[in-house]
Picture 1 (tube, rainbow, N blue to C red):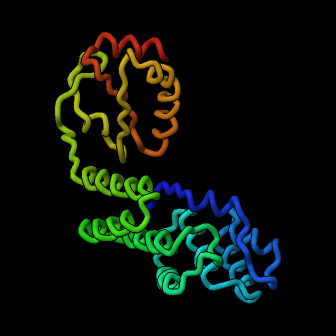
Picture 2 (picture 1 turned 180 degrees about the horizontal axis):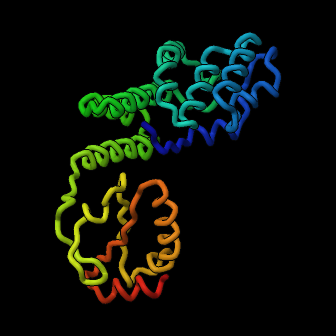
Picture 3 (picture 1 turned 180 degrees about the vertical axis):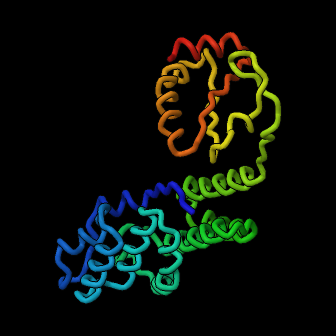
Length: 240
């Protein structure tokens, strides 16, 4: 399960180099919070920083930032015990950008909320996301986004489409989505209207998309929302 994660924490962290012990050089510190590191690269750097004497709390925060930045819920779940241990003895002077232990605990609750969302557990999601809100209201936008995503997914899971419902094509002929689907694996519906400038501008791209996806067994159908076969036929012929 993936989320579009936008954290002021990351921006703050990237803006300042964390204070590491003297044994840890500046290059290692920068690599630890690099935005471009793969998991393998990050793990290697974290091990080097640990051997050099980097504080456990700082390493935990670096892992937290990496997991959030890469939207890796599995990784975040894996490091939860480490994060919870670091929260027990949180020291602001060893923090890479978090203002307080409350902010740190809020993100721990947030990770638990992500886990609950991934399992479809609405009750647990509500419990953990509420705790995250309470601990760090400054991150309300992030937490609210997760709730919205979960609710949207829940609604989409209940959506059904009647493939046999009669529709009319641009030639004023009766058909159904089942007919449009035919022997294809799926059908992509693109809803448009003649008064919609962006829709009209993208018509050539829709044709290219139909040709490209058709090779993979996916049919593409443009659905005119104006209920006018004449308009649909005109657009079909003029946008060719």
